[in-house]
Image 1: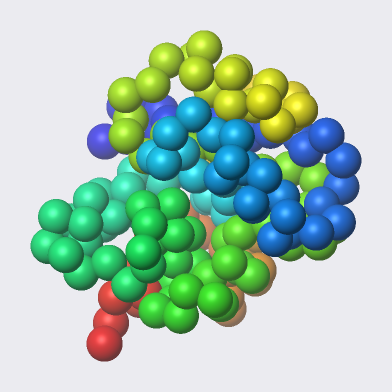
Image 2: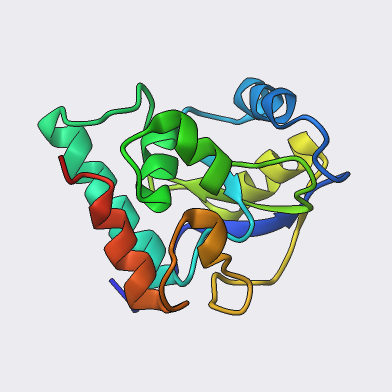
Amino acid sequence: MSEQIFPCRRVELNEVCKNPRDLALDWIANRSAEHWALISGTALASDIHGWVAHAVLMRNHERGNMRSNSLDGEFIRLISGTHHVATSFKRAGLVEGDKTAYIVDLSNKESESVFEKNANNMGFKILKDRPNLEIFDHLRLGITGEKTENAAIGHIHIADLR
C-alpha cells in the first residue's frame, strides 16, 4: 500500500471558493466519471492515509454498508471521521475561502491525462504537492489530538463506529 502513490492530485482552484455547493455541482457536472472525488486540499495527511480511507470505502461498498449515496460522498465521510454525511462535507469537502483541493480517482485506474482533463475542465491548476502533514488540517477534520498520520488513520475508523 505505501509503495504506490495515492491516486490524487492537489490542485489550485481558478478562484477562491465562494460558493461550495455551486462548485460541487459544477464538479459533478464536469467530471469524467462518478468515481472522481473533489475534496479539501488539506484533508489528506499522507498517501497511506488516502489508501486506508480507500480500502475502507471499498469494503463498505462491497458490504452494502455505505452511509452516503455515492462513492465520493462516502470517501469524504470516512476522511472526516463522522457518520454524519452533512458534517463530513464541512470537514473534508470544500468550504468558502478554500484555494486548493484534491481531485481523487476512486477507481485507481485512470491515467495522468484524465487527471489533467478533469482539472482543465474546471480551470484548476495541478500542483506538485503530495499529501503531507505540513498541509494537513487535522483540526478542520475534527481531530483534537496530535497532528499525525496515525491520528488521521484512526479518525477514518471512528466514522464507522455505531
